[in-house]
Structure formats: structure tokens, C-alpha cells
Image (cartoon, rainbow, N blue to C red; front, side, top):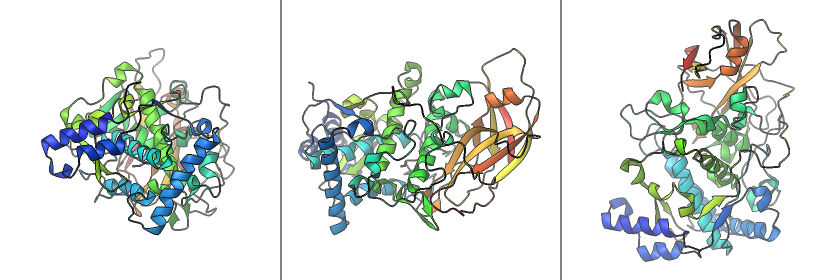
Length: 472
Ligand code: C2O
């Protein structure tokens, strides 16, 4: 079998030495090569449910995780420790604001940077576990709406994290994982974000419709959540970390998120969905080909504390990074049908609500255009938040929950919210067809985050809600 596992890192470090870039000084070819020089096994990243069926494989993973956690407990600075690895994520997002040039969220680095980070992390575990076939197992939250057993078992190193789980509902809802049951076009995507046709957003307004985000830097200095980063990315963070009083769990704050081993399983699934999306050659062909993207590299830290550099040109092909996924379907093939916990008995009061008139749908003409609910001038909510948006006829009974048209979230970063989304858009095409010509009520209903039964939410401030039409 060809040696595909260590190539990217070696090539990258050679190039960097030739370029002699200041940030890259101190990387030794031999050092990096020997640290990542694994045997030439083709590796498959597995759904944790299949991964955990082999108890000795799981035990090696747990053992390496425990060793890293124990090292950090003794010495928080130990480069072999789990905390040192987790802090790499903190360091790449603890920038002065969401628009900072070094920020890897809210722009085209989002998928790419996290892919590189998971890969570095899994190589560390591979080395420490002595399991050469190890690949970090992912969590398919479309199929499994609770944190999987292996990541939740009390006493397991994989469950060692601050989490404040909620009880009502205790699992992720359809909205939180971007599954849109009520719209036949979106329903078949499994995850709504997979409908994005372009990787790169050309303007700030396009970012929520793009799969991979906008270039950074860009002329407008625009930034925002790309489609997948918005949902399910944010809601799953808040779900895993939760909240209790003023404290939030690890996953609910970007500064601490990567301390929870589930972080890499969550991002593993986002990374897998990137592969799902790029199976379509037309979509894949929209991935960036400019030097500004491909020649960019990020520097992480290896187990001995030495820098390890990953170039973006080396991560687009996962086989070059040394892995593929066991399956690319959104839902686990042959898995049980997911019964979502939609019937929330104590649906919370809306944090915003407004009446809107839907234009009459054009009869018999389908030009492929879609209708969106656009909310502009949305102020930073200043609290961790996951919110679902519902539409119903204005004269519907108060007990009518309406149709869910989308979900958004605010995730903390160092206690505050880096709020990138002053504009929110939700595809309401199916609902607009159904309710054409009627007056509607839009309701923004918060999801409970965490274990507080009496969690209070403040009203969301915004300037305007309207319905817009967009052609694909
Ligand atoms: Cu860098 Cu899910 O966060």
C-alpha cells in the first residue's frame, strides 16, 4: 500500500524551510518526518457506534486520552497533555473579535482549519495509544440524537469534560441538526446546509448560503457563519456543553470546547459532511483554487512542543491526509428511523414574534427561486442561545406550534458572544407555498440550554423581518 499518511506534513515543512517564513522557523524536516512517520496503513474514520464494537480498540483510545488528561492534571503546560492540545483551538479563536484576521471561524478557514486540527490530534493519539490504525471516531448526530454511549460513559476518559446536559428535551431536535422534515426539497438533503451550491461566498450577503465561507481577508472585511457552521455546528456545541446558572460547559464556549473529547467527534462529522457535499463534482469545483487559500498554512504543536505546520493545499484530499470515512450518507445506512423529540411539552415563550404577509405563490410556475425569511439588524444576544424559527397562520390557535423553518445559535467565546450574524436568513419556500397570501406569525422559540428548568431568556433585538426571493 502506498505511504499516504505522513506525506503532507513532510512536504509542507520542506516548502516552508525553502521559503524561510518567520512563523515557520524552527521546524526540522527530520523532526517532523519522524514524528509523523507512521506505517502505510490505509485508515478509515468510523462512526463511534461501529468503532466501539471492538472493545480493545476502544480501550486503547480511552487509555491514550487518559494519559494525556493525567499529564495535564500534573502539569498544565505538558505538551503531551490534553489541555495543551485543547488550547490550540482557544489560541486560534481568542482574537479580539469575529472579524480579526487571525480568527478561523466565520470564514473559509472554518472547515479547513478544523480538518487540519483533527488530523494533528488523531496523529497524537495514534502515537500515544500505540494503535497504528487509530482514526478519531465521529459522532453522527443526525442518527444519534444523544451523546453516544462511548463518549458519555461515567468514568471514561472520553466523557471527562464539563457538561450540563438538559433534560427536556434530552436529545437534539430536528432543527438543531439542520433536518427539515417539513420541506420535501430540504428534507432529502438530511442536513439543510448540504444544499449550498458554492463553497466560497463572493460577498458578505452570500456567506450564509455558502458551504465554506468567505475569503479572509476580503475587501468588505465581511465575516459570518457559513451554512454548516451555523447549523448544526453551533447548536450541537451548546447542546453538548449546556449551561447551569452562569456557568457553561466546555463545549458551550470556544475557549474550552476542545477540552471535551466529543469536540473532535462533532467536528469529525462536520468534516465527513464536507466529503458528502464534495461528492458532487459541480460543488467540489467551487472550492478555492487561489494561492491565498492553498498556500496558506497553520502551525500547530506536536507532542514535544515543536511546531507542526499544515498547508491548506494538503488537506483538500483526505486520502493524502491518510483517511477516508466508513460511509458518507447523512444518516447511518440501515440505521433505525430517528424519532426526533419534537413534542416539547413545555415549549418556551418566544424571544421575538412578528406578523408578516406572505406573497401569493405564483400558480403553476416553478422558476426554481426560493423564498427566505430575512431578519436584519440582529443585535448580539450576549448569551448562549439556540433558537428555532416557526411560521404559522396569524389566526392559528395558540396551541398550534407551526412549521419550523430553521435554527440558529450563539456560542460563547471566552464568556462573551462573538456575534457574526447581524443578518439571519431561513429558507421558507415550502411554508410560503403552503401559506401563500395569508398573514403569518413568525415566532423565535429558544431551546433550553442545559439543566436549569427556569432558564430566562431576554428578548432578541432586531431591526426588520421580511420575506425575500432568491434564485439559485
Ligand atoms: Cu472551532 Cu466548533 O469550533
